[in-house]
Amino acid sequence: MSTILHRACRFRTFGQCYSSAVTPEAAAVLELFRSTGAYLQGHFRLTSGLHSAEYLQCALVLQHPTAAEKLGRQLAEHVRSLTSQPISVVVSPALGGLIIGHEVARALSTRFLFTERDPETRKMSLRRGFSITPGETAVVIEDVITTGGSTLDVVEVLQAQGARVVAAGSIIDRSGGHADVRVPRVALATMQVAAHYPDQCPLCASGFPLVKPGSRPA
Ligand code: ZN
Image (cartoon, rainbow, N blue to C red; front, side, top):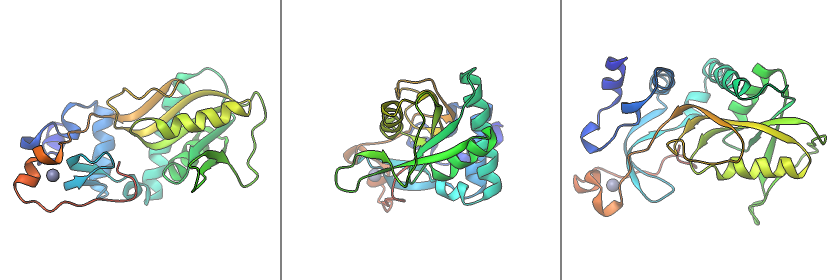
């Protein structure tokens, strides 16, 4: 494992690496990201405005159905361990949660729904005729949790419709375990992202080109 970690961490001098303090399972997840080109290294501007040398692009690992299925199965096992209640539906926020949520639902043999944000009001809701029966047990699945805001919005949409939300899960937790979504939560890999204010960024100082990857930094 240490070999993998060492190989994955080329910017160690710029601060704590994603993979420098993770569990063996998280290291295996990160290795899957690395092997599929989803573990990007460079100089990235995060949504927060901070700069980072590392970036996990979930879409790039989830483009491979076998990897998506494997991650979904692992996440489903963790979710199951959080609750003794039967789970009847998995719900994810579009767009990021669609593929992994679907795979978790497959592993749990439940149906799968997704929520969408109104482009103008940003309000999250179930559309397309999706509905919840009051009393149904639900879990909420995302690809990446950063603040937990999207997962929490989905939890609230479901609770407003009478669902019992028993757990939440994500592939990656970028909050270092701090995000509170008001239900038991699990992630396959929890990490504290090393990030810098632009005026203190060693990559800026070295003139390394800055990029903003994807629509939603992971
Ligand atoms: Zn920078």
